Image (cartoon, rainbow, N blue to C red; front, side, top):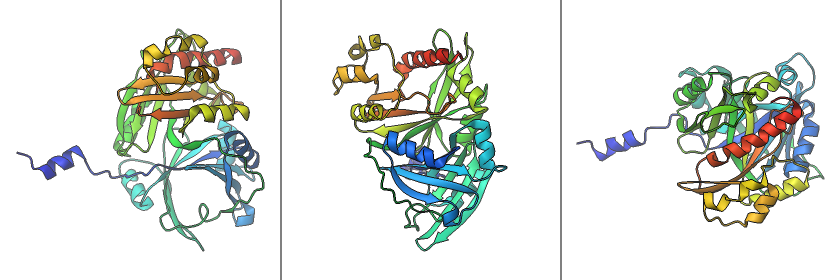
Length: 375
């Protein structure tokens, strides 16, 4: 007979890479000052911190903004012929760093690199009068990087090299809370490679899988697998194209991003109707599904707390799983290239990702692709 202690270890293996959520998302952009202003205005972020020549950083300017537990950083190069400038030239504005909170950034780097990760940054201790912060990093799909951030001994506004960004312009927030998940688009026949990477290198589990029967329309299809760390605080769905009559959204992304990368960041809210209403009032454009989607919505998802008409007016989608239901909506691309977009999501118990909405959503995306001549 197996002892209770041994059985507990079998059922709950030691997490060699404990993560406490997303520390921040960093974007490489052509003009960080303007990008930060846009996200403050349109999404309701507040000024947080700045790094640049005035703080001793000579090659770049970075603006950090925050809303609740959600932190974005926008970085632009001050000259050409460097990694940041090359990234923007190739990809346009996009996500570079998905920074993860850890207790020990040195151990996180050692655990992942010994399991096969390619190092992006060896553990680096950064210090100023507010304490010390340790960061390290590994490469993932495309040019995307996971940073490990250890900040338990740091009490500054953001991190060494930054100073408080005092601004007289701080629009009211829109109710965005934290990163729910980040989706990566990878090339043909690359999904299982990256699933294995997250399993073997980072200790994640594949908690959901969708094939081209789940995610397909008359014209296009894709496949997706959702990777989650042990406590579920960090989730990375991975998409790859599947055969279809015409070009899928993943193929369009790969073409215009010129490679693999982060397709969208899902942002959590506790009141999606209020949040989306505010975002629309500030100029954010969302994908819309036909109003017929709502004709049998309550038959499909059963009773929900929300009134149906506001959901219909805003184009918010609803899906239910064994744990509860969720509400979600997707912006149109926020760049001129049809690449990065955002999802707004409110979970009412559901742990899934809206499988019942896939067909309506991807048909809406196809209508946008067709208008761009890219279907």
